[in-house]
Length: 161
Image 1: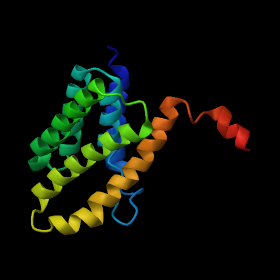
Image 2 (image 1 turned 180 degrees about the vertical axis):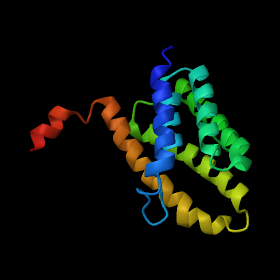
Image 3 (image 1 turned 135 degrees about the vertical axis):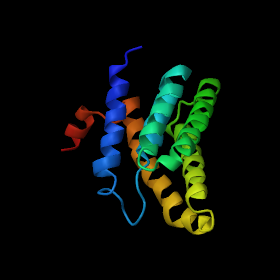
């Protein structure tokens, strides 16, 4: 296992959390970059890699608010392992099936964190931030899956122009 790409992924996640997270928010809906990267790792790498990367990503996300660090780790590790187990046991050839797994992961992660932060306004948070953020992340995830499958390449983009 080569560790340098994963360190770069964690660095990219921290950079996103510090610099670009607030810039790319559209009406309260933001990209959940941690879930996006962890889903990609869970679908394409081993279970051990998924486990330790999700723990490290939870530590990075929890460093913003230390009282949420354990919840972030739990909300990332358990669904990541479920995504990995489901991904290895069923046929995930289509982009839609991978996006459904990512949508479940997004909803679980965002719901747990929203319940811990503000349990009283949970129903309001569902339609104001959780669902729009999930759709926003799924659009970026769909593009990432298309690139990984080879359906979007530089040659095809150049051919359009």
